Length: 107
Image 1 (tube, one colour):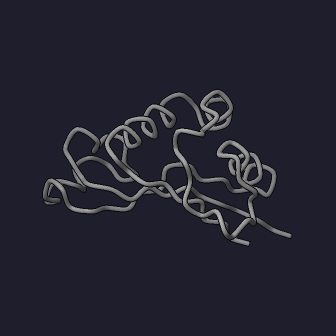
Image 2 (cartoon, rainbow, N blue to C red; image 1 turned 90 degrees about the vertical axis):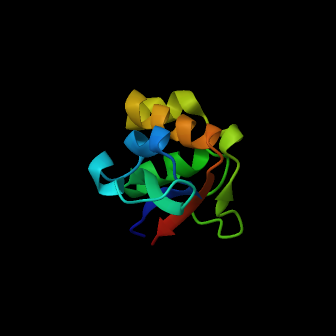
Image 3 (cartoon, rainbow, N blue to C red; image 1 turned 90 degrees about the horizontal axis):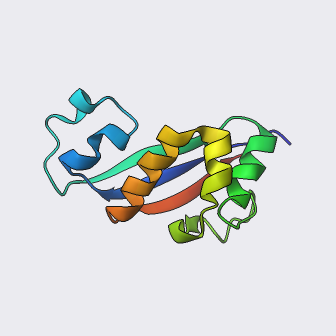
């Protein structure tokens, strides 16, 4: 089965997190503080990477009963190996800023 997946974040916008979001900072220039926004955090393009991404949060890639993730359960070491330090730093900033995270499989 072909599988790709992403982890999206949902939470309140603030200027201090703009650099950790999906689009370049200037794209958020007109977004008001506190506005609820959605952003991709991790994107897995292959079945193997999708399963690894899910495992980093202790869920199965096709476990449709566990879309909302516990961001404190994240395996930061493995996420860094797969996606790099900058991406994981952005995730941590969003986590500390009160964002919720969701696993979205695309099978």
